[in-house]
Length: 130
Image (cartoon, rainbow, N blue to C red):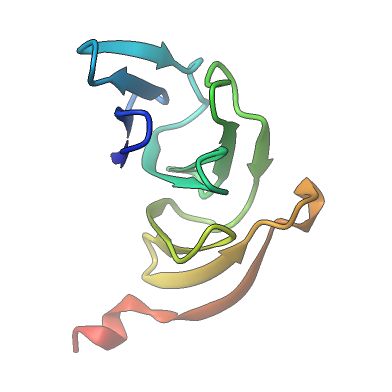
């Protein structure tokens, strides 16, 4: 779940594979995406509020354009063989993805969709807790 203070909207992902956008001023669900093939697990807002990024249970990342929430505008497939459970925005162009396997990936989204790539695997989360 994430919050857009500029528009007073709350965005959330759900186990049924949808992204929902709730308008807090009107206290109602304003947009709901089509059902994805798998469960959406995490969501962040990037590119100065122009893109919404969701992670999925199958290791894919879905990109939505702000205001066009019916279907994703782009996909980043095969990021992980397992689920991508958490996303953390570093800045407007880079994020960190944490997967079920404990791997932490640094991801960037260039201006062209085919340039979306995992820069490197930073390490395993277990090394921080042992």
